[in-house]
Image (cartoon, rainbow, N blue to C red; front, side):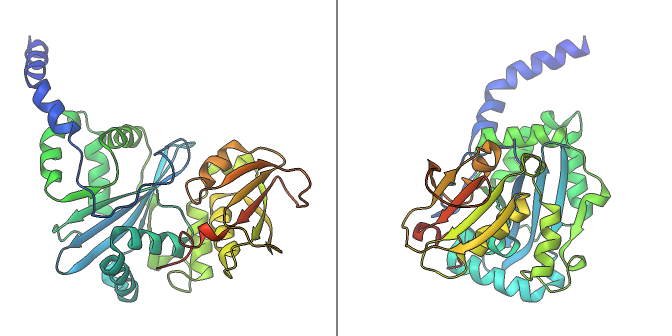
Length: 309
């Protein structure tokens, strides 16, 4: 009888619940469209931002979902203890908005950031307690009953480039994911050279390796034909952190406007993930001489994606 009453109540409220849940969250003005669709079949990384309109950033974190072992990892930036990082991050956030901030964090970590969730005016710092608490709330059996009220509350403070469908997909993945105290990592406790240093990047890279890319074992040669020094190394850092093997980084003899991927042996998973970092034209390798399975020609169009404003 109680179960019947619950079903009737849900049926009566269903249209209002649907309207509430299907309403998209706001996005930042000028927010850029993503290079690829939201795809949780590879390791998915979300940038969490806490900020206040007048005071700037409160805190940052990155949540990563690995689909093979269904595990969540959270990297806490703890800006209260990282003032230098806060000043730099504030600069890009103020001058370039969420796109500039995300590009800054992504390039410094050499890790792709697929989407963002930004909480405004909440005076929120990301801690193990509140992240674990949110995880347990999502896992609870009562979560979907509370979802409409939670959505209404979040409408007031949350901006995100996740669509409603993507959020529901993410919630479902989180409900089936493992997340323990050991999966909480603090930036100031890894590496030794500070944010953006080689030592810290290597430590971060070990946290964000995509197991499917690693198991696919793509071997790649990178040729920088952009005319801008360092772009080949930038893309190499991303690919190493994803789990691919970069055989060599070379300078191109002739400039190229476009990014081109020459393929000897196809690695579909790698190619799909690469497309979320830079756009490219895919071609079958013929007379090109290179080591490994694929050759990436980094062209001029990659400059704005692999450098800071």
